[in-house]
Image (cartoon, helix red, strand yellow):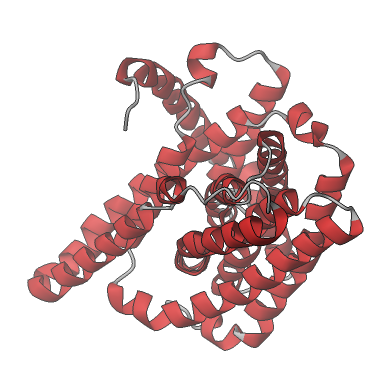
Length: 356
């Protein structure tokens, strides 16, 4: 992991204490009445602390957001048998591909034709808004030979909209009284970052929503980042930066590729094998061991959303300028209804019966 264990133990101690406080708050009757899940409370607490108070460096500089997200998704794989991945994978990938392609080229067209941003900047915004958030912004931005400030601006915009979606999507799903499977599929289609999507799907309060989100976001969107990077690198070399002739940094593609997908699939295979081989004991494993894994995963979700809040500075996010922010926002305006139509109409029968 290449982390300083001592520093992160101190930081984690603070995160753990805050997570206990979060669970205490979320257990209050008024919070339950408002249907606010613990991860959402964790995000709000983190945002308040980070944007009102000056956080100490030992805490702010040692947040393990990405690490918690990866562990949470790998543990999610342990709760989903391989047979389910095979059965649901086609629909999840198909739905994700439709939205990813439409969103990518919509943001790119708006950025370059409407706001006259450089194609490399437009591609970076498109990757962040359609594939897998921050990681895609970094990989696609470098593949497109984008300026570092453009990559940083895209990351800020992704974080801004990801946080808004954490608050907005679960509320909208409940107002529309969507089935949990449909809600999770919509979130997986229209949320921009893994951590934020986990927060939003967990806020639905149903395991089916988290599973549906994970299938679409992880299997359908994250795993294709390498293909998009190669495509963008080719466009950059041939059309946008003819003079530089820089090659794509494929090491960076691998470095930023969501390798936790392999862990997600591996734990799913392990669960399937154990359930089949152990017969009656497999049922015990399914009931008791997987229950413990889900409890651990819920704690990890809370740590993740505390870290998101503690690392998100609203002033920095709003300082990127109106053109890239508006271009991304118009992409959201296309992505959101498209994801809803696919989840609640086109594939509604599949997601309504998902995991039932």
